[in-house]
Image (cartoon, rainbow, N blue to C red; front, top):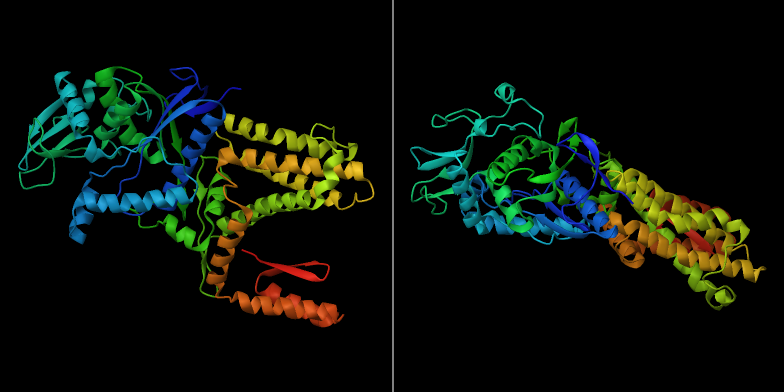
Length: 515
């Protein structure tokens, strides 16, 4: 077993070799808590949730840190608009963001440091940079700023692979009359005494954006750690500046591996709040199941762009076609597990003749192989730079094999030994399916709970009354009992027009509302 990850620093796939054997230290740049999380954030944090799940599945003891930026000019502006304390706004948004990320299956990190709670560590790092000659104090009308001297750090640009002399042309560079060089960036922003901030050796102020992550990562993972993650938009300047600050004091490497997720695009542009083209995670969950959103995100490799399509239907509904398709696939996975469980339960004592270790009947040789191998195949796909599309495809093949096993169980009533083997294989398939889905964060609830939450939402979105559907289904059952096949077919067509699928089993009928 070898895990290979694409390292932005070297622009190569590299074998993961942690600083301490069988451990992994992972830092993920978190959200700035002034607003709700959008779907692009969902993609980023789902990607690195899978990374952490996979490392743990492969036996690594993982320390997962994801910060919260609760000190930022955007937070201050939004708080002023709402006339509330900036940290109160941040705490409110933090809870909503974490609720949304938990809902889509992202496990809470081991540590979630907030900038406001780590001012001493930030000040200490800034002072160390000043002492090293890598930073300087500059007086402004508002107070004393502190800037990092970019040209004092010779390898600057090594993460973004930009030459320092080319950065002035086209790069997003802060301008200021007090900086010695246009490339220099703020470590501390001075504030007047009545302003929002904290006391420091340079006067009242608050930290710049970049310094916070260097300080907090070092606080929880050490001055050198394994993996640093974030969206592709953070490569420059944020992560480039993190490296400069950290390595100017502690030496290289700050992080050994740098992983960056691709953009979630709307109309070929990155989804972002600044562009105003974002859809929040809550917008998605109003219309689709959280696992469907997660499945949709996993269907594209994390480093590539993912197009987020939005359509407005004739009936006025706004839909996300890609997530609708993903929800149909998630339905299939849950139905497969429920079907397997029902087949095993129905067989009951009939399986007593087959021990769990019995070899599969010749007819089930292929299915048995798929059942046995899929969990490891999923992990093997994730070993290759988190290849989630392949992992998801393996789960699809397992579901196909599982449904074939159930189909054959129904045909083997006159062959008790073969049927018992098939039922035993169906039981193994349940375990295999759950194990294969676990590192992807899928199949994380019960079948009845999934059916309940999806039905409630689909009824609400289509303004349908379940009692009216039940009445039509009952009328159709009565028509079938009376052998009025014409009326039964008419009622099936009426139900189909409502997106209701019916399943006949003897004298009874079950129904399901499709996506």
